[in-house]
View 1: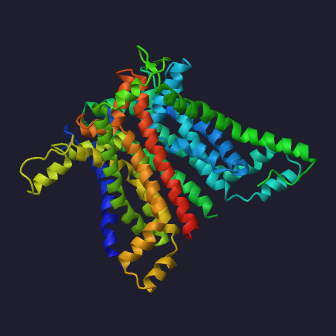
View 2: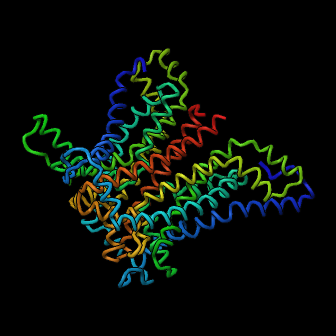
View 3: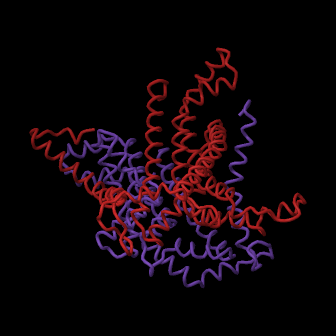
Length: 256
Length: 298
């Protein structure tokens, strides 16, 4: 940055802007005081309060059911789609269609699915949230896997076919292992997204099975409490770990 | 890439390719058709029908929903949503472009780290990221405490529940979506072009506005699209940081679907959001085509 020293100013502002709120939340989550704002010494009491909060735990359970299910389904459908697009899609139109859910405003997808489930008389609950999350899940897995597919050497697949292996066995024993890191990374991203997704769940969930973000929404609307700070810190830890893991998995294999 | 070099007769090979194609593409595309394309088509269709009594629609065609959307109450909401989304996008660009530029100038090792740090907050819970700003901007919040403590102000400022708070929350939420595409377009830029411009006597400002900026325009427009569209449809930030005083089109859509139970009218407002999405999308593909044919974009 020799002659562009002034660029440091927006650079520093951006990172301060991005991380200051996070640092404040994490610090305040260890606050002994009951006031969410003023510091009263170090304590982990809000983490204990959190661990005993039945609503939060129930929401967490619901969210995990949705996230695990949505991840599994997205990984299968998204991987098949990515391989298919890489090999068989001549126009960019199918690619755009497959990746559309990633840029679709979530409120549009949310109300659309609400209208759809109502039209086909599906009662709302965790199953409808799961089905909804797979929509963007497919797009993210497909995007990550397709990027990897374009780097994979297709001669192994051809050799496998030449040696008489069928299409299915070639796919499972050659193609899938060679793109496995991307599949895992895509799955981790979908899991994180589903865990944190609020808007679509808000429209497609039933009243008796709130997911964790819906529980958080009602807590946040009620006001600021130190317990939310603790919950926020834990959730950020989970997301950061998953994203860094996904990043590491793709990078390690890219450099090989 | 074709299916394989074995050719046991053209008909059989073609049939096998078709089966493979269907098996790979079929499930995912059918899923997206059922749970994305049809639901969105449904929203578009609902715009011309009549509301049902308890939500849903009665299939009597009407244009009332559109005329109602032209009511000054709703055009004002739409106008202020567009303004807020526009200001958000502008601030994100003014902050994001130089940041992306600075990242692109870093040594390669640090570039990856800097990019991960940009993306990381984006992957955390949206509600939590918005909530953090309540903690910061509250009258007893961190920012006010710091300002009072530093003796800059006597009494806490009203920071929360303002338009400014809504914009801050939206910029915070979507800034990474501006930085990434802009960075990608700057990184692709051939440094020789800038050197050539400098050698030909162009000043730094002229080089930037005549060479760098036009060639990175597709990235800028993609970033603007990624920031503008979700800002426009957002209802969480205006609710939590605007405190009900700043109503955006997303809040009205949400209320029409979940409270007022007037789905067709909510669908018309959603259509407005979709239209802006499509317009920006067309603009984006036009800009990237123009650069890739006119310039020497790789």
